[in-house]
Amino acid sequence: MDERLRRYYLTALGIEPWCARWPLPGAAPSPESPAEPVMAVQADEPVVSKGVTRLPPQSAPEGQGVSLDAVRQALGSSDDTETAEPAFEEAPETDASSTSVAAQQAFAAMIWHGERFSLAASAAGEFPYETGSRLGLNILRALDEAVREEAIFFRWPPFDNPELPGSDGGTFEYVLERLVGGSASRQWIILGEEVRTAMASALSSKGHAVVVSSEQTLGELLAEPAAKRALWERMKPLVGRDRSE
Image (cartoon, rainbow, N blue to C red; front, side, top):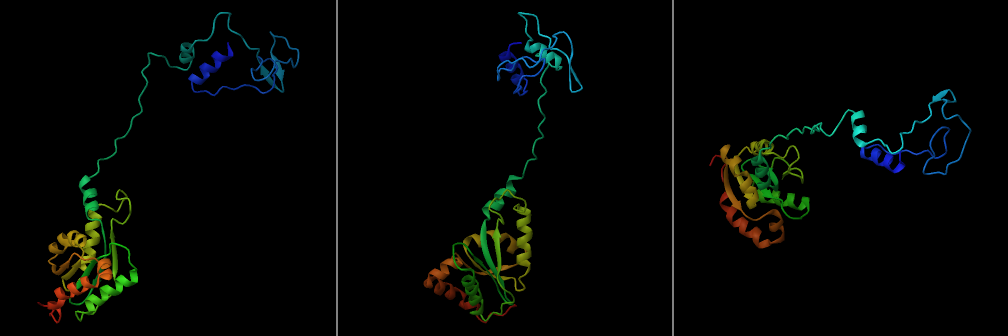
């Protein structure tokens, strides 16, 4: 067979063509190396080398070559045979509402729980964590409030990729319910519009009330003294307010 035709057939069948680096006894000369007689052998007798019996190659009659159809038939396939298409399992449909809810409620907040009030403040922007935590404590202490514990930092979604597990609406509601449940007073001071929007439904469903709400975030309060004074004016009526009111 013509070497170029042989390589074409092998490549079409997905078989990597192979050529010997050195001349082999009884083998046709490789196109990669010049033909050199290694040993004289009888063309019509088997050649025995190192215990392996090698039959002499049988060439096809002149003018005839092995067609691609013959190779396919030898492998059990033909043009008439329909190629079986691979079966792909369809991915389960995801609830688009869960992803959209998680994306719309993206926010970061710091939460403090006191005996009479709870504070949830937006942590958007860049500011030192210790400075923001100290400001939240001072806001509650200005109301003569005893803060029971350190600030709780809450970020939603928890990962940068909202498609990862744990970023669905069910997880969001579960975590938010745990955070809201830590409020003994059920009275909230909310700072930041995105925090108020995200927590509004959870607070109302649990019977909690928002007594003071401001669009200012912790970062804005730290950067603008006038914003802190405006917030204090809105919080003054809460001073000395009894828990039962």
